[in-house]
Image (cartoon, rainbow, N blue to C red; front, side):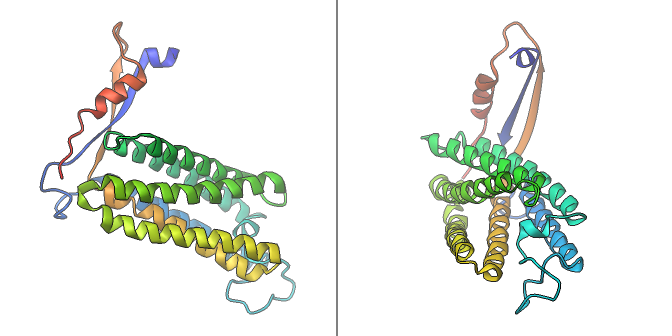
Length: 270
């Protein structure tokens, strides 16, 4: 509270002028944030996979049977379990968690002035924040070092990540930004269904001890998650985000009040 009294910072959103974004002439640079998250996280995880395969820590995903001397199925967590792959895995997951958190906050601010009942938007923010926290547990507590905490991170990431996908799909159809709700909402519903099916199938195969197919499903699940996040570029291209910082004054507003007041300046041009 003392810090907020000294420095007041808020993030506001504003839409580009009419005629930009939709016709492709001008798009917000913020559209690249979810794309960077998707591309760099995907590349980082595959680098971890190839390092682990090269070091004979896991056998390849396309193997019909295990390679001699290789003990482990190609799960992502096992691929990033030992150095040097574990170092890359930790860095990738920490950066992914940070970018996912930023996307969660920006998405919440984007939808805040547009939803009548805020509980769904708040639920989406909380779910994605918990999924991001799960990513940090996955990246910093390797499976062989602390299996219990690592599994908690897996449950948080997959569980709340799946919930986030369904919430955002519902918000997409409900809010219908720039009349593109159905265009992007239907693919998100399909991706959410695929993610849910992969999660269920993954845990079934794990419980049955069918590790090769479970590992393949896990990789497919993660790629679906990352593809889903990339779709936020469609809506982010219509918005710019500004950080407003004002000097401390006696008649200052609280952070929540200033954020609410700033959101009222956002115009809705459909």
